[in-house]
Length: 326
Ligand SMILES: C[S@@+](CC[C@H](N)C(=O)[O-])C[C@H]1O[C@@H](n2cnc3c(N)ncnc32)[C@H](O)[C@@H]1O
Image (cartoon, rainbow, N blue to C red; front, side, top):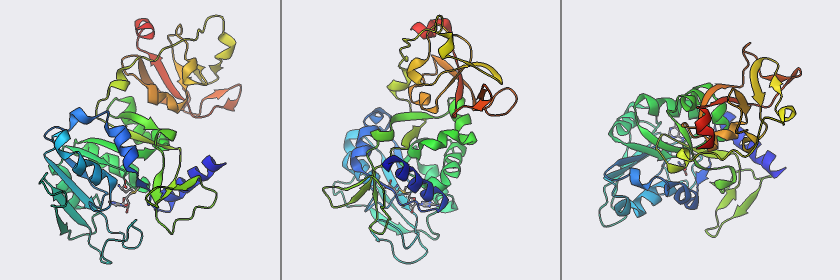
């Protein structure tokens, strides 16, 4: 029930362009620990972040020396009336700040932008050009455009997104081509987001943290990245068999593939096409499987079994018989 409510609130965040979910430091630390080796001598851009309020900024400033960073740039959109700490002037200007690791942790210079700090503006694009790695939680409502811009500029990134983004054709195609992949934490692995005082909490799974901030647990977010991490090279152990259990793996009406209801039920002795749940991508090792297609059968219609559409499935194929047992 609470999960349903959480999902519908994030849906409102998307459709109503209310992008007021702020990331907790503990969730950032839990993910970033897997990528630390990527950051030496790099310029990091957090382009949906107020340097004085964002926990992404806090993380990179606190860990600046340890990671060996070159620079941190934060730019912040001015949507005037709905930021967490109400710290932006009521004007149309966004702002940006550059931190270069000076001893005093507050020694960054905040500069007003000419425009409102929209990540798509020319001035924010020129900040993006200076960056090596973009790390943030961007607005859910603009996620497709956000990733398209990063890919166009050829940047590395690590961002939070709604799990549903996997089903966007632009994002799925990047995943299938191995240009982007899921990070380490998803669902309950991201413990919740800070929401402003005026946010409606009715029916949500909420708590107040030790800092007095209101936290909403959504259970439907993930990290998306093109930074390598070791987990994506782990082989998924396959413990089930197809032979002798054919009835548990029915064929689709409109595609020569078997249906597998749970990732852990992928059989070790079937080497053709299989339809698996989208959460399989969290365990996806590109050396073990190939991602072939999303959701559709050979007729271009949703995959069906005995006339009934299945829940969203991804069609995958083992790379080779050897990769199943590696
Ligand atoms: C999901 S919140 C996350 C904020 C912050 N990155 C964090 O993780 O705590 C998304 C942020 O993007 C900002 N935003 C909305 N539209 C934007 C745009 N077009 N360009 C840049 N930032 C935008 C929102 O004001 C909001 O602060």
